[in-house]
Length: 475
Ligand code: URP
Ligand code: ZN
Ligand code: ZN
Ligand code: ZN
Image (tube, rainbow, N blue to C red; front, side, top):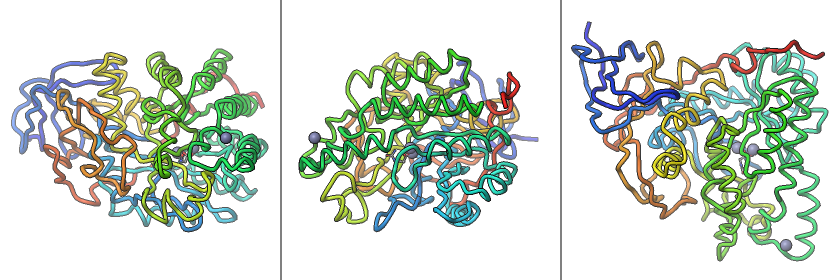
């Protein structure tokens, strides 16, 4: 029987190897890797190009309710289209529980937003904002069984933060069910204190967003999160780490034998707090939490990517339009930095930034690139080995990269719903030019050929971390 698609003459990279071979695809799955594979209905010549597993971005916010009058810039159509053009084939957005409401209600709405509208596969994490007895006792355990195997909890944001007790209760559900907890580590009380001081001084410009969320605020919360996870005896993910001191908390916990996964993001490699200084409120374009820091922290994050402090490199894509009363320049946001919605777009540039600045500049090798952006993502969140690698039996989710193509970032050429890119003008070498999802050609020589709805929802297994307990539980 002929293959549906063969990708020929490319250089394949996985998290462990780089080699020359052809890939035979049938019914959406990789069924052969080798030479002279024989007949195919369609073939792609990948001479001089890299053939990589499609990117998996496990940290994406799309169509998330964001408070009064604020609207996220991406729905599932634009968000997944942008992800696809950035070489991704799966993204994991967050489904936010509204206070006092069941998670199932939010999931129903989220599935309705996503169904039929996606250009990449999607799967959802759950944000637990109200861990009531019913949510902890019945709803979350049932949802884990249904394939929603990761929860995010927040230590910051007035309306989302959980107390330490609530975090422990949520971690205990993870302990009992094998779910994985992701923690946003910033000390809300310390931030409130600093915001009060700055506002009293009349210091309300975007730059103060960074000043009121210093490293100490993130470091303390990171220490607390890993300590709470130690008490509850669960693995955990520390998301969007911005600096060396927080990295050291992760490393110390690991030396104590804890399973802690670290994640960092493009903004912590490419931006600094000085970007928040922009004239005429332009600094609002760079407001995200934790804030970008300084050149030394950028170096620390590169070091963490190289040394394995970070297993995950994700975008934390959280897009708001800039010139928009429903976005960064909302009427309240123009009076003080504290009302500027937090988050920046980045799902399309995550991989090109790491490729250009990391692989091409010799900071990381190609297998490390694949591990950080696809393989570890799939393993951590229960999608491996179906996704995240190029292997027989895996989904044919593949991005073909031209390592020599140089482009300058122009938001006008991007595919998200925001009206700016924080990386405007950045010159990057190495871009994905062909993207295949489940054996179907989606992007061909930079043009969209796939259709909305080709991407589908995927339920997930438990994390490999949660299912491979090497010690008996303490409690
Ligand atoms: O500023 C950010 N990172 N916004 C997105 C929400 C979050 O905390 O991840
Ligand atoms: Zn967060
Ligand atoms: Zn100040
Ligand atoms: Zn986030």
